[in-house]
Amino acid sequence: MNQVKYIFVTGGVTSSLGKGIIAASLAKLLQARGYRTTIQKFDPYINVDPGTLNPYEHGECYVTDDGAETDLDLGHYERFLNFPTSQANNVTTGRVYLSVIEKERRGEFLGKTVQVVPHITNEIKERMQLLGNTGNYDIVITEIGGTVGDIESLPYIESVRQLVWELGEGNGIVVHLTLVPYLAAAGELKTKPTQHSVKTLMESGIKADILVCRTEHEISDELRNKLALFCNVKREAVIQSIDASTIYEVPNLMLEEGLDVVALKKLDLPKKAAPDLKNWNVFLHRLKNPKHVVNIGLIGKYVELQDSYKSILEAFIHAGAANETKVNVVSVHSEYIDASNVAEKFKELDGILVAPGFGERGIEGKIEAVRYARENNIPFLGICLGMQMAVIEYARNVLGYKDANSTEMNSGTSHPVIDLMEEQKSITDKGGTMRLGAWKCDIKENTLAYKIYNNTSILERHRHRYEFNGDYLAELEKAGLKASGVNPETGLVEIVEIEKHPFFIGVQYHPEYKSTVANPHPLFVNFVAATVKAKQK
Image (tube, rainbow, N blue to C red; front, side):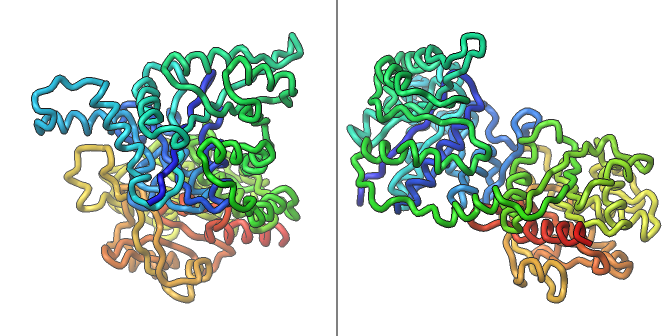
């Protein structure tokens, strides 16, 4: 078996520089050269996973096919590589310590004092090599969350140091992402923060092999030479990462800079053929040269932070390009929508998406948004909680059950059209206990859902506790809200739609998690197409 090669991506100076995008872009280029490549993320927080984190804290929680609640960077990995990630691709400090403590309780350390070195670092190294040991990959890229110098990151940095040494020359390299800020007062780019960042890394015993410099302005040759000299890297290994108009340009920018070539050289691997980015560039061309423009309202309660709905925003980019349409996503806070202002707020919208979420805040605004879309024939897509709001709205305003609700919002409602799943009622722990991961859904023929998927059986990812209450199915269907998709094992309703409407569909799952550049999700593609059609009318 060939030796698996490892690339570690660390960050310095400040967070949010885009380690995930650089890691995904490098992986894309290596994949396009014919190398079997995967990416994993190691997060320094002590939560076992982001499942219990507020979206305001950490952005959206991304869910994999196998039901892992993970960091949103895994979404970037999947969107770039068009390859599903898993539980093994995201590890947190909480998970590492939990595992070590459980081993200690079982007596696996034979009375030894359990310490950060070697016990925690051994656990981290083991997990860093987990994907590599499957035999499915030639190159494993590991993104280390946080910033070099953070207390939280120290065990990871030490583990990288040990592992690079253990793997031996040419088998493990470190890519360090840093910031070269532009000082307007001085009118120049400054290298000092990068020098300090590299110095901090070296104090931990790690030498950066490649330096990727985030910048708003071109880095001159003189500056590159200075960075190479002061940061102890080869001149060719100083890579500029300039601000791009879209993250999907970054692979091309990294190709121009030769990031993949330098990485392969340092890993003693042949270049193989030039990367095949033909389809990627077709997508980019369509993205940058739209023929139509539509405004789609994103009705949510975490709209102040864009990352809360990251996968939805990206799915609109993929679907927009597929339709040669620029999708302007207009964020509307559901807490501030009511019957008196909904027409004013929505007058410029060509489509309405009611977003996922938890808890009762902003619920009435979401229901009002659904009513407006239904009554005014505006294309509508409801995701997870958005689908549940569509059911509640229909029960209230068509069936006339004025207090219809979800027991999540009102446990005493006389018409619980959305209710807690039976197996969820005894659960007290919040982490990792929802209905998670990929579940089957059978689609009825001659429905909008069938037209969209062109299939009678699909697999989609879930993340929720509450479900459509089957006791109301016959009544709602008779009144015109059809259940077009049902889980074959549980009989739970997955998709609802209205026939006599330009486009009205609600899904209990999260289609946005499966949208990629290579495979835009059909629900989003059809939704955007419906908004274009509605606007032209």
